[in-house]
Length: 364
Image (cartoon, rainbow, N blue to C red):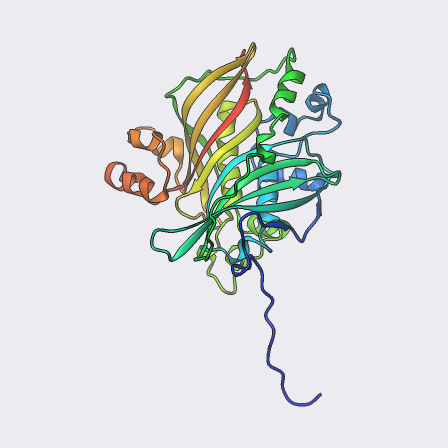
């Protein structure tokens, strides 16, 4: 062959915005088998304060043959398996809702993911659209093990119907909590070290970076296709962004240490405020919304946790007065930044995400 050849093909990834419709189901291109080395690697990255995720013996007492794969890992796997044929064409990941562990998942299982488009809504200026999608992770038996809703910003989409009329949802069929409570009744769980009440504000002492190599490893493992997470040729080191699921998992892991031992955490809602880049140090503080005894010996704690970037939380914020508006149901990143700018400038640009979550814990 003589002469020269110019590139003439470009592979497209992500959602086809010309064909998307309410009720559309998308099947991930990947099946992933998770082995024990991945479980260990994740546990070395993320703090975890859950007995079934740490102890094979405790999982056995509950009647399971192996430790559960960590909640944060499954959250990331569920999000990431939809990147190549869904989220790659998006502009911004806005929010995660109702992230539920549905059935036990173990090392050795093989996972696949399906996505269903639940709602498409145009922004007020008609420049963009938001898509609400339900993501369900299933094992090799077809059993759903994890589910969540994702809110994502896309370029403007022409769509006449904007809401799926559907009263049934995999995520609403959440019986795992009842199963765990039934099995854990009467089991002695030690190491509950603190009592909490509504209105408590906790500065978490643990602060940890997400390193370059760690970020590259998990971006590769989770099949992330967006170059902003790994392409150091295109982006400068301070521009490589840590994926949102990793940030949320790290913030939850950091906060969980003071609330341990936890059973079955559940993120009700999490959204990002400012991005976290590789080598940023992640910390957190938490506000206790409510504590309810749900059966003798067990309570459910309801918490709003604020992730921080590059703040030594316990050392730098011990004398800080936090505006009460932060704890009263703020719903948008712009609201957070506005409140901080006017009433708590020391944290302006430092809050990376906000997660509202619940978990079960033993009452001594």
